[in-house]
Image 1: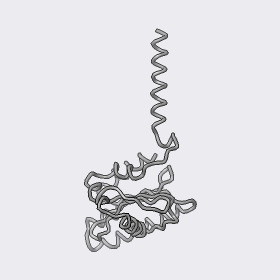
Image 2 (image 1 turned 120 degrees about the vertical axis):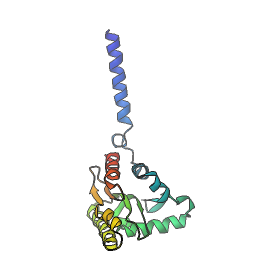
Image 3 (image 1 turned 90 degrees about the vertical axis):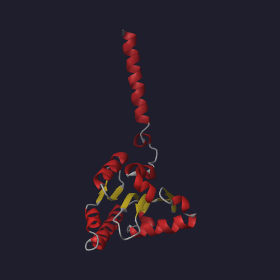
Image 4 (image 1 turned 180 degrees about the vertical axis):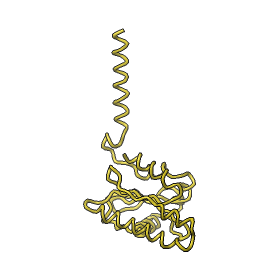
Length: 181
C-alpha cells in the first residue's frame, strides 16, 4: 500500500513539474505575441488581416495576405500601421498588431511591450488611434462607430499594453489577457 501511495505521489509531483515547465511565464521564455494574437481572433480575421511584428527595429508579417508581400512591402506597411496606431518605433520594445487600413471598418488589435519608461506614450498613442476611429465613424457607419466606441485598451499584469477594437471585443480581449498572464 505504501508503494502505491509513493508511486502516486511521485506521478503527481512529476505531472505538476511538467505543467509548470511548459508555461512561458514560469520558464522565462519569451512570449510569441503573433501566435497569441492569432489564437485569440476568429479564423476569418486570420485569413483577412496581416499581423505585423516589430522587434529589434525590423518588421515581419504573418497571416492574411502576408505571403504575397515582399520584404520591402512588409517594412513599409508595418511602419505605416505602427504610425496609424500612434506609435513610434522607439516607444516599442516589441509589438504585434493588425489593423484595417480602409476607413470602412473599425479594426485594430495590438499587443505592445513598451520600451523602458514608454508605457504612457504607448497608451496615449493607442488611445489617439481609438479616438480617431470613433471620430471617423461617428456620422458615417453607426455599426463601426459602436465597435470603435467599445474598444478595449488596457495594460495587463504582465506589462503589455493591449488594444482590442473588433467585433466581439470582450471575448478577444479576455483570450489575449489569459494568454499573456
